[in-house]
Length: 306
Image (cartoon, rainbow, N blue to C red):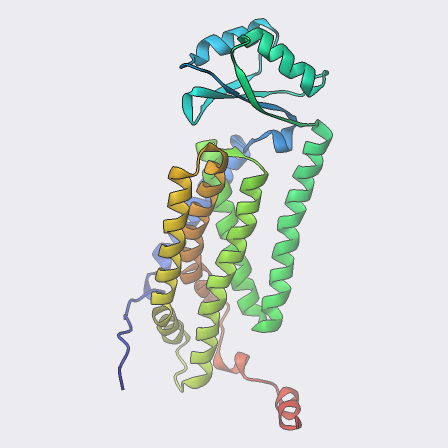
């Protein structure tokens, strides 16, 4: 019979350093979120986005000066993919998108090609902001209930702490780097929650099995053994996912750049939190074998099954 080569890394013994690093990242993230905030896209703030193509390279300073003279003083202008393509973001205007497009063409020249125009009203942007926050909150509450029924309340608290850890750090990095936060990034954050939870559930399954199948009573050793047993699966899943996300990040274009970045950060942080944050939390809460044993009522229900 072939014996699997299971590593013997002392994850639990290094948890103090990991928790210290997590605290630093969370404090830095919260500080940046409270001072700098997030750079919301027009999905949340409202406004108009125009993607414009030129036949030759364009100078952003000239475009900004032209728009400023036309009373578009708060216009945000940046390259989009190449120096022949630009994105212009404008605050909500009192005219229709068709009239706005015509006005921009008159300002920048008839030779420009307006490839995309997106308009979001301020009221819609406010509703999207509120609904997005509620969606994330409902997802966390649903996960808390699911894990509590599936495992035990300590596991539920461990998984939720890991998910909150992942979300705060991901949002914090977006705040520090001032990367635009739009609906695609919100979707990526929700996807990160699902990815991180799946990783955590796999680890929790092995921890529960080890608790029930061993005579040892040292919770730290049991949890450390489970983390090592699932390490190869965790690494393979994370690496293959990261390869796809790196391809999207570097080759997918500007449209999905922020989306891919959020997933890249989330996968790395989520993998880390499944190993250190979730397991450290259930260990700190004092999980034991007795907590996972079925109650007498559950045993009788199983015995009475046909």
